[in-house]
Structures are given as C-alpha cells and as structure tokens.
Length: 371
Image 1 (cartoon, rainbow, N blue to C red):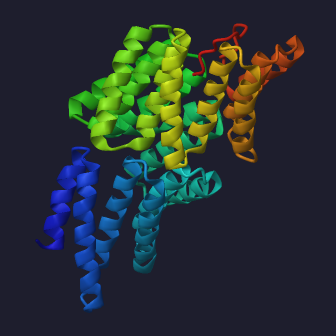
Image 2 (image 1 turned 180 degrees about the horizontal axis):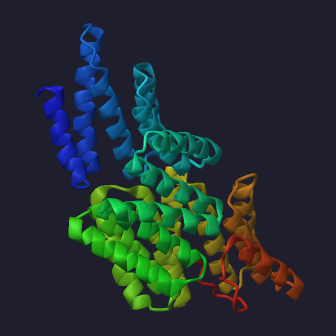
Image 3 (image 1 turned 135 degrees about the vertical axis):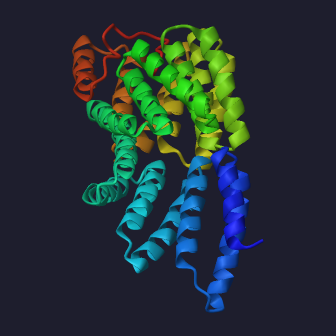
C-alpha cells in the first residue's frame, strides 16, 4: 500500500480509539516516507502529518516519552516549511506530552506560543484546544480557580463551534476541577454531560474518561456501589484502548473507594497495582497520591511508623515539584497521622482555600476521602 493509503487506514482506527493498531500502520507509512526521502523523493507534509498523528496516539495510550519525540520530529519539519499553524499544532501536541512527563514549564511555554499563533491567525478550533490544554496544566499545578476559568473559556468556544467532542473534554476538565474544589454535585453534572456527549458521537476514550469521572463523583458523594460500577466501565474501556496511565488513575480511585468502606486489604491490592503502573509510566503525581493513600491504610491498621515512611517517600517525590495541591495533601495527612494542632489545621485550610478548594469545609478525620 502507498503511504497515503496507509495513512487513511490508520486514521479510521484512530477515530475509533484503536490507538495501538493505528500506531502500527502510521509507523509503516512513516517508514515508507523515510525510505523515499533517502531516494530523493521527499514528502515533508506527509512526514509532518504522520509524526503528529504518531504523537497523538502515543499520548492517548499514555506513552508520553514517545509522544514527545514524535512531536519534536513533526516540529522540525513544520519549522523547515515555515508553516505557522503547523508549528502551533506541533507545539500544542508537544506541550501535552511534556505535561504528561511533568515538564510543566516547557509545556506552558509551548502552549502559550501556540495560543499566540492561533489568535494571530484567527483559528478558534486551535485556540479552544490550546485553552483546554492550559486548563489541564493549571489543574496539575493546583491553580484551581485559574483552571476552572480556562476550561470555561475553552468550552465557550467549542459551543460556538458546535464541537461536541471538544465540549465533552471541557466538561470532563470542569468535572475533575470541581471535584477537587469540593463541589461534588457539580462535578457529577459535568461528567454526566460529558458522558452524554461522548456517547452521542461514540468517542470510546471520552466515554472511559467520563465513566471514571462519574465514578469519582459518586465516590466523593459516598455512593460506592455506583462508583464501582462506573470504575468498572472505565477500566474495561481503558484496557481495550491500551491507556495504562488513565487505567492506573481509575485503579487508584477504586483503591480509595475500598478504603472508605473499610475493605483495607482490597484497597491495598488496588493501590499496589496503581503504584506499579504509575512507576512503569513514570507518573510522579500518581506515585505521590498513591503513597499518601497507602500510608493512610497503614495508619488505619495501627502501623504509624510505616504510615509515616510512605509520607516521607511522597515528600521526596514532591521535592521541587510545582504540585501545590499535592503538597497540601501531604501536610494534611501528616496532621491526621500525628494528631496535629488546631492552628496548623487552620493554616492548612487557608492554603486549600487560596487554591480554590473547599475540601476542609468540615474537620477532616481518618479515613479521609481524597478527591
């Protein structure tokens, strides 16, 4: 088959969330194009498009290292062609991969450079996608108020464009943000809206994403039966897609839910599984939050020394990382484990409120349902 025929076949697979299968075909097409390049039959636009798609697929299955490399290759071609909008697309993809790798400064720089180009060329679709990406970045940094406003800005544009997929991802972003802000009913509404949109367009990845979010909203509302049902739907779809990172986050949520109903051994098994997956994918935030919850399980079992060791491990991972919300969580768990003073709790409550979170609106106690 010709490279363009392979590309079309891969596009069909990518559109149906069959990212691993699509990758195999994109790679074949890219190999053919690279061999033609050595023969003096260069097709820079073909290499550019396929490298972008390869980056997209690796990103969707959680392989951010390979995604970053693919976007960098695409960016080289785009810069050689001096195509500003293609440069913006590559920088946006590159920023998404870097966000997944924890390279937040680099990610923000690429997002802002891409956003400037999209605004200059009056590209609302690119602008909306870039704002959505920035919202996710601010969420990772713990800037919740800024996150919420940025997702809303992106959603407004997607609604003007009547882009259901974009709207769905913005509602998921808002669902996650409002959950960690302590607005659990609003979180449920956003995720439910997203699930409805994704079901309408049969977006498998989006459906998995929103099922996990609905499960988390139910978890925070104390409806654990419904939470487990939705987590199961999410893990089944993530396993089908091959997204190890999102699968790990869902398993982490399951572990927290089991902890809340005092099934500590089942919780430990789930969290150990999540820890292994986060280690394999080098997801630092995932490792931090999992260690905090494993520490809580040890504390609930009466093993304070082991519990504090998990906190120490999490603190080492947090060192110099810009994860403001996770730093608050670490302080909260230390306060819970060591029966801290009231003034310490008030100071911590102020820190959460500054970020935009209401999770300490009532006095915390163990077990603590971490959003």
